[in-house]
Length: 526
Image 1 (tube, one colour):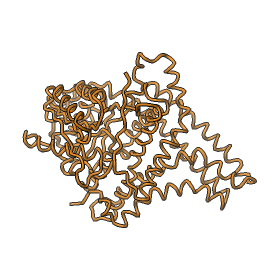
Image 2 (cartoon, rainbow, N blue to C red; image 1 turned 180 degrees about the vertical axis):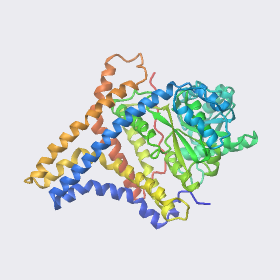
Image 3 (cartoon, rainbow, N blue to C red; image 1 turned 90 degrees about the vertical axis):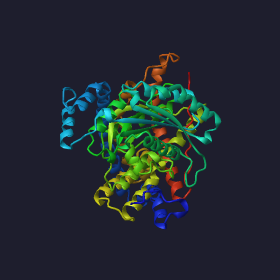
Image 4 (cartoon, one colour; image 1 turned 120 degrees about the vertical axis):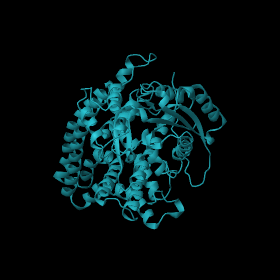
């Protein structure tokens, strides 16, 4: 069996450590390239910068189109009569004409001899918590209960940390007491602190709870092949049609064990309360998730996601050695099943919080820490290369190569694109003030950027359309600030994307590992 574990810090081969230096090496090289080229050839520098700007201009156009398509798809899927679609799957006949893809999906039943019916499926909802208050956790449980689904087919697992203290344990047990009877069964599972070879993070918590759930299923004689486990953070509130849509997709999947299911995170729970820079970041992240949902070949596990218990058991659940267990789970499953793993989008939102801590400065800091943690996904680059190319496996190398370079390019662009797009056009003229091409480059770059700003209109339109109802405590002028907030876009792009990614990659370069999951503080305004 292929070893899918991340090597322990003191057991990493030299080749693995060299690969950990790759992301930072490439990112800093890209950032320094305009300066180096300016010393050699102003024309070559201008060609590189113009090419880069044009590439991102084309990408921006494509992203704007995808955002519109994704937003439309999201609206359609939220309004579908999933109960009728599920009845068709149950009865093995097509009675619903709309949507048109329903008939094509139903044809998969005969093509692949599918046997699982919606009535067979059991859902497990696992909510991970560390020190979040009841004001954060309770609405998440209530959102699950509002699902248009039979709750007696749903298991609730509240995975909490011993290191959270006695109050957290008492709160978890009280929530199970208050809501447990509404589910098939419910349980609070305490993750012991300081287990060997575990980083302090969510992965250890939900893995411990997953193993406990495995024992419960065995005791109750429930087939893990029929159980779908969705992991939620404390503030994740699924759309009421999420469970029906997930069930529908699961029942029409040819090999469910080889598939993860990814809903769309939308950071809008508290969007009216968050400071303007955080609103810009939250909206941008929501739109990026919508775009990713339309590109299944690029889709990876993120935050809330679902997977069959059978697959989780075979992967020994999530990694306990990384703080980015969600994205890493894709690669973990990919290598466990010899490259036979895909992520299917569920075009329904899981509503999450924008970053909001107790105080403006603490909020700014918490946002950087959160994105720094996400950017630690660059640690998957050495993992994928080492496991894929330097270890024995049956992975199709062409597929692996495409996936690896998408992973690599994504993290390098994350760390470099904002700086290159904003400042690189001014570099040649600093070193070659007499050169005509160098002097013209800022004007040309500005023209390209002005045209690209048209896409901001689409962002403004959709950002307003995706807003939840304005709380009564805010007056009309708050809506005006929801438009004016976009002046922060260049700043947030630099500080909270580029700098956070560079910080994580540079720490990885020097072996200063992020081995503690810094939980994002969740303040609640009322």
